[in-house]
Length: 434
Image (tube, rainbow, N blue to C red; front, side, top):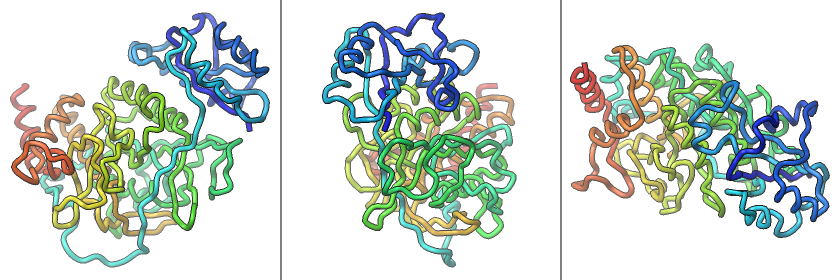
């Protein structure tokens, strides 16, 4: 396999050097660079390694914008080795130790268990929407088509009856070519526009946000626009399914959601542990937040204080799950600073192959919050205003229903999402600012 090494320099290479981003370089090698920076060039030469230099990210425009520069995206490069073989021991550490290098790491596949799903069934009892007073919010707005929610996940069933006409843009950033893929199923080579969801996880999440309501509850934000970005392939190990993807490729999907898809909200019903080096997704999440994109993520499903990323990153709205009775689930991970909790057990939604299924997890709770944020942004837009991320965070913290007498609970954050109080507060805030 041809290894990739991601390097963040303290300063970008010569301004006149037109280095292509790796995503386009893999498909078109008409522009080739084989030198990046004297120190790195020497280390690679000492190990007898020839490499191509690419950028980790593409600029949002003709030149790098201020936010891209501030978060170091313009000085992050991907070195692609030209020959197959194992990386020499200590190579990445040597590069990382250079005085011109800010950070460096190899490419690894990160994996996370996917929630177990049940086949289509009939569920009795109140709908999850009743638990969060969704009808109150929908009386004020059903969403705005100009507000886009990007679902970064296992893809989507674009032709599902519940999602037809809902997904305006889609892209696939899963490319595991060159890695050991014996445990993977389905499509996992070649980043392209194929977002076929072999597992159903992304389709399930998308339905919670935007379903038409034909054979299931209508989505939280039915009139908002969905974006499907596939960043996870499917791995099967010992009979259990995992969503798996390369962290750096997921980062590319996040930037695509911000720059190309122009998302207002990003839902990431996924999470990975920190395995050393820089925190996963840190630079690109800071970039998304600086562009006023709200990032909502699942807190994790192992019921432990383990931190899962991006949920554990500052500024991300980490979401835990509650039962139909409003009690925090035992499986909700609480290492991330949870903002609020939302319905996450026995959630009935769209699934792969035009189907429907029931699933439980913080993966299901997260889109309830992402869809609710999209409704809030829609309402603000329809009132002639806009909402900054810090305003949304403040709103959720003030109006969620506390689970005890503490301001913030470790396992429940600021409490259970309450859209009646949330929209009353939002309407008051917007009226006061006129």
